Length: 321
Image 1 (cartoon, one colour):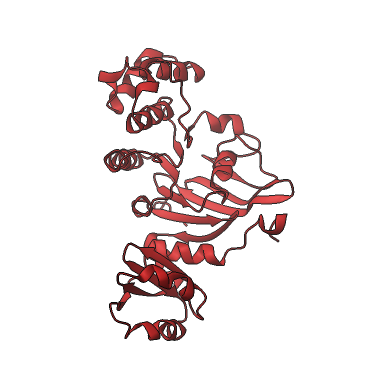
Image 2 (cartoon, one colour):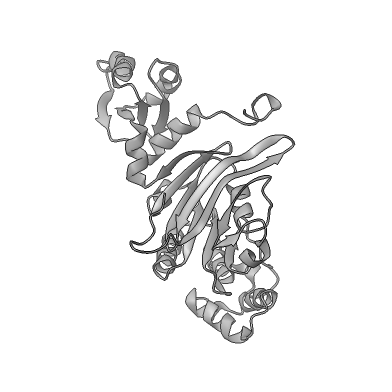
């Protein structure tokens, strides 16, 4: 999916295939292949329970795959997991530092874990890099979500990793903090750091160089935002009006409808067969108070459509085949 620089041997930061992890006989990650080039931001998308976190943990050496092979930063994900951990910054969904330590004390603790030779200088640099110097004496537990996020990212970067694995890093923070965070991520990528970031936010997905969409352990789509939308081949109609919510369930069962999603007073109806879809919405054209018009397919339309087609690997209490 990524494209390495012209004239260079493929400098894949991540190159894995057949990645599989099972729990209780269920494949929570099922034959996943992933390639991300150095210095790229890859968005990892999918519903809760889709296998994103499990995949990230296998890539950074925290979990051993049941099947599959590949490399992370040129190191074998099975044989060289310990070496991978020293070159990767992993930011978990939940704040994982100590609430009763100050910002500086938390960073000093992480620096000790990595046995950094010039620990104080590394902590000073991390504080400066994320704008934390003025707050360095503040207890982590007293920080807002946005400042906790900055501290967590500073801790990820203190050992100068070549790859960042970020697991829903902006959950629970305000839009301004999210935007500041993404500005920082793009600066890091420009410096050659590779980023794999899982997110549920479509505006964040649009800021990635490329995307991978995973559901129930399987990769359903990959590529740039434009490539994914074009490949989906969706026709979309927007239906607007004061009572559109009542249309959602009936439209879901109509022939040719792949997905229906409400956005305020508008409903997006998507399908792959344009003629069938038009037949489904035709009875609504003359209904008083409704406006029916063609719309551009969005990433959200595509992903809602994809999840509707995916087979739940926990359905009926057994893994998907």
